[in-house]
Image 1: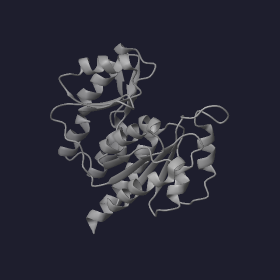
Image 2 (image 1 turned 90 degrees about the horizontal axis):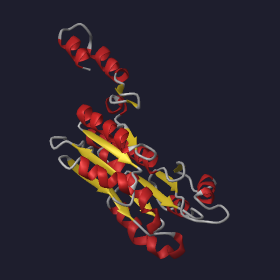
Image 3 (image 1 turned 90 degrees about the vertical axis):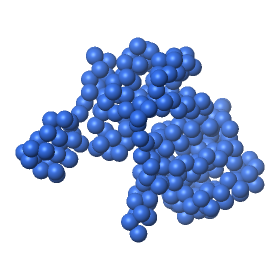
Image 4 (image 1 turned 135 degrees about the vertical axis):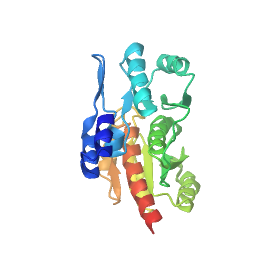
Length: 258
């Protein structure tokens, strides 16, 4: 990256060429265990996210330290309780933001400045059990510069519970909604039929028996008759957070331009 900037400063390449080179340039190797795409945020406005599940502590923390050195921040998802405890000790000299239901962590240098885009993302869950997925989505949307608003336990088993949270989302004029639901996955369909906001539906693996572990919820969301609703994979809070933030950030950019 430094070489590209030096060639730009010396007039050897154009601004357009430098931008292109930055977007395709950097893959940072960590020993023989990982190849980090440290240029992803420059290229796509989406940082690389470290998936902790299945990694040894040694490999995980080595990867995270390299990300901190290069980008000033690292997002870690799906930590075990033991990994989370160790990470809090390992990175105690950094700024930590913990998402306890999601078992996720954002670690940043003290001087790291987080982007604020003006995008607004609302998140609704059908049940309290869905908070792990919702927190993961909220973490990602925040780190992509959005303000997030999370309301839990508004499922269709007591449809009256939906009124106040949904009213609040509309009053806050959110740019995109994420709706997380397990079991029969009905909540996104209901919400999509009431609002004119792009909606990302997330099937959660809550539920058991026939169609359990999110399968019935996924099928129901794919079959939803309400329009304006898109669906991500089971428990995929990260994917929902990225898509919602990209929508909200484009809306915020247009709002600012006006």
